[in-house]
Amino acid sequence: MKRCVLLTATLVILGTLVFTTLADAQTTSAGPYYATPSWDQTLACTALATCPRFIVLSNLSSAAVLDRETGLVWERSPDTTAQNWLDAQFHCSRQSTGGRMGWRLPTIQELTSLIDPTVLSPGPVLPPGHPFSTVQSSQYWSGATHPTLAAFAWDVTFENGHVGTTDKSLTLLAWCVRGGQGVDAR
Image (tube, rainbow, N blue to C red; front, side, top):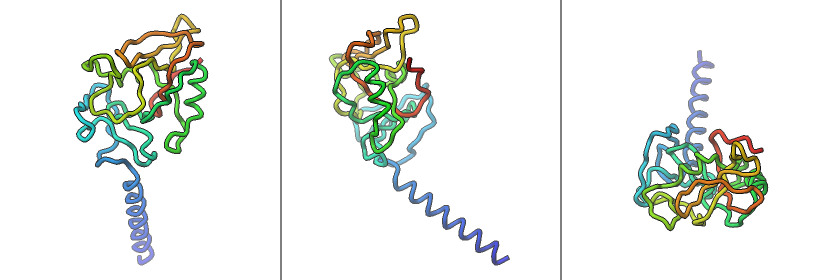
C-alpha cells in the first residue's frame, strides 16, 4: 500500500514539473496559445498589443509567429532576397528559424490567408496589428505548381493581394511556414 501511494505521489510531482516547465516556454502572450485551427473563425486585429490572432513564439526565439486562425507558424521576418522557385524550396527546407527545422513554402491558400482585403494598397496588405517585419510589397512564392503549366507556380503579391502565377525560373521572395498539409513540390 505504501509503495502504491509513493508511486502515485511521485507521478503527480513529475507531471506537475513537466507541465510547469512546458507552460513557461510557450509564448510572449498569455494563453490560450493554440486554438483549434478553423478556417471559418475570425480573430480580428486592430493593434499588436490587442491582436488575438497572432502570437509571437518566445520558445522559437521570437523568430516565429503562430497564426491562431489557421494553426500555422510563420517566419516573423521572411528573407528579403529574391530567388527562383527551386531555390526558394531549398531555402525553406534548410531553414532553422528559432532553432527549428521543418519549414516549407506555403500553399497558395495558406499564403493568401495572411491577406487582409480591407487593407488598401500599396501594401503590404497584412492585417492591422500583425507582428511581422521585413514583409515586402512584392510577390511571394507558394509551393504549388500550376495544374496545367508545370513551369509555373502560384504566387501572391503583398502590395495588393493579387494571386497569380509566375515562371519558376524568375525570382520572387519566399516566406517559410511550418505545420499544415503542405504541397507536392514538383
